[in-house]
Length: 352
Image 1 (cartoon, helix red, strand yellow):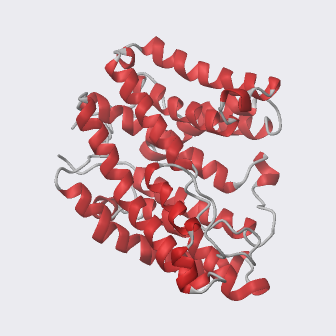
Image 2 (image 1 turned 90 degrees about the vertical axis):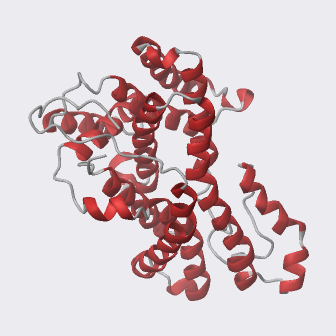
């Protein structure tokens, strides 16, 4: 396969780093300055970027090999090995270091074992005696998105097996339905009754926005002016019901424009190393550890300055010794083909 010519690798790494930067404010009891711009944190926007990119690439993965077992296997190899090591690291390395309990009491506490439920995507938000003096005691507040991501993968598999992904109008309908669902649930406050979290519905809408753009990849023009207009509309709609549809349209479109219409950066590096998942998995516990160590002296700037290199080192070890070996048996291709420089207004076909 020819070397890919896109900036998806850089976008993913940038989004993971943005999540870390955003948490540096929340974990030190400061307001994220991005909230004043778009009525949400920088981390919220970065998570939406992940889902938009995932919607585009994962649907492409299905079409390249529409076998449900292999599809699920590829997704599992991408998610669970890194997650498993990160959960064990948090529970049995970070936990014993920062718990107020004795190590023996900590290891025998049922709460420590309960944290391992993350391995089957069941949230567990605390470890016994860990980070209890911090602003928040959650050991890894980034993991909440992973069950939603897995549900989105399963949705793709179900729609693919049912044949719905072959029909553009059904993909558009799913996207519009997701947007409508978030709006309706928000207005009538019925989310708790149906066990759907509006934030979760919004991420599904963004994911499906990426899926729509995959279907329209040979038709949709990628123009800087349209990116600017959509992003401006999204920002101006902050605090209103229109922010949901604006975000579900603007973020996927902006991601594709940034991936295909900007000069590819460090392409060879991202072909060999993908730190984004590890940065996402380890950033929060690293910052919590910094906060617990420095106490009130931990400012956002210090959290970022210390957190980025420490997390990057852990992310590299995760990639080198966990994620890449798990994928090496049969490489999961995240690339979407080369950019056709002769067709500057239209996305190229996705090819292997």
